[in-house]
Figure 1 (cartoon, rainbow, N blue to C red):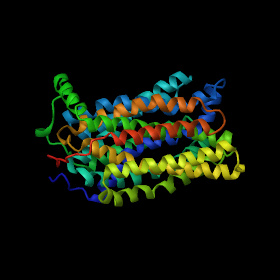
Figure 2: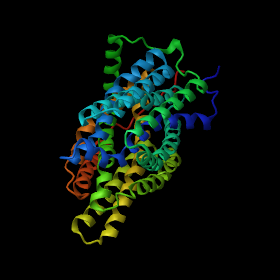
Figure 3: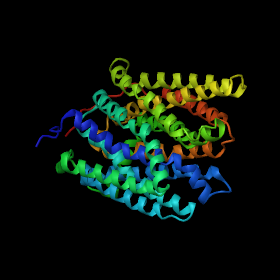
Figure 4: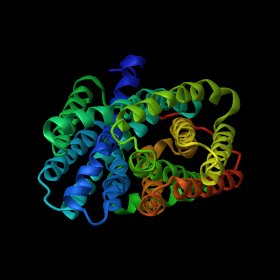
Length: 406
């Protein structure tokens, strides 16, 4: 059986579906944050933002293990097992009676979702490399970004009909469908002959090899800054819409519009990456994002704009943040894995786990210091972007791409 017997369109759609569980489990929860804060944390509503970062923390920790396990046992069984853990976490979250219990269940959800989040990157790397891999990931990301466009609206409908606890049943349904599609349609991409036994010594050797590449270490640092921008924005955006601009009731529609307007960035990346190269495209994107952030910060901080125009400026900025995500992360993944195809699972895990866990440390404070305005978020994002640009300048320029061995 050929490893590429799945048509390109279905292959990309399946990878997008596997990755989309992450966006669904985060973005569908955003409209529920006020209700959760009122029921479980009435004295400190900002703590409800930890619903996002606790999930991200579990996802980051789980990512460290999902890749190596998939290197030992294959991609498909690990992804399906991850969906099972995710479902257990969702079931526990649905009956949580305290914020602490809910946060613990969200960490468990994150641990499970790590497999469908990270292993598809290794699965793609089994079959593709370099700019072709970056193009595949870009198209998959572009499709999966439809989820943020519909997830908040879908979440709102569920909350209105069943309360915020009903969201977790929808997560289980989504996970089961995705697991069945993968199990029935996608051939295993890692032949037994290419698997690495799950032994501590081999894992340590692989970890040392991954971190011995200066390019990989720099990619981790840059992705930390980028994830910090994205997760910090996700954590704060519902409160900004509700409290700052008094548009809480229409938040789901606005968030969906923001996600849709950011979709062309993925298509643009797929077109430009072959011309500009991954490193240059990432750097230019960060520079553009920093410029937009500084402009919007000055406009909002100076209070020279009427409320409706300040809101429009924030929406434009939010679109630019999601557009940035559609461009930079696929390229950074491809750069990091360019010389590590023989240990793609472990390499993917180390890179994304480290960047995700470290990003929580910078994203959570951005949400917790919310003061009723977007100013703290914009200042923090500007700092992170400036750091990302500086780190990109320190990245080695001689990356040799090795074709997949599978």
